[in-house]
Image 1: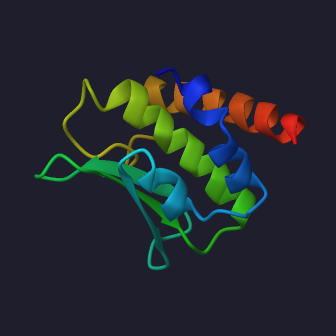
Image 2 (image 1 turned 180 degrees about the horizontal axis):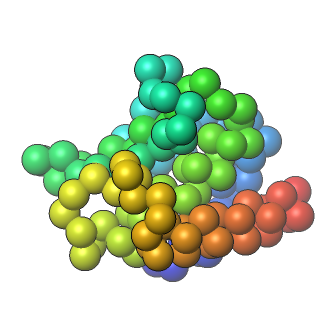
Length: 118
């Protein structure tokens, strides 16, 4: 499933208008989402795969909702496109890598697309 198809669903639109929380949206795709409040402001979120093979997406709870949504979409890009090639945590100390730039670019486009569709 492409990222556009994944993110262009009624679930994602419900996420944007805040009628369904992150947890419910991602549980539908088998991804565990955690909102955490003890991350530094420089870390908006990150993704990792547990020993059991479960994806975990952590979002900084100290930033505004729109930033959380953008970070969420950014991390989904990593799950779809980068995690199959990398077996480590994506998002920590990687902000200057090409895969981060690409995920930023895609998340901006998708957020803009979803926002226009509302």
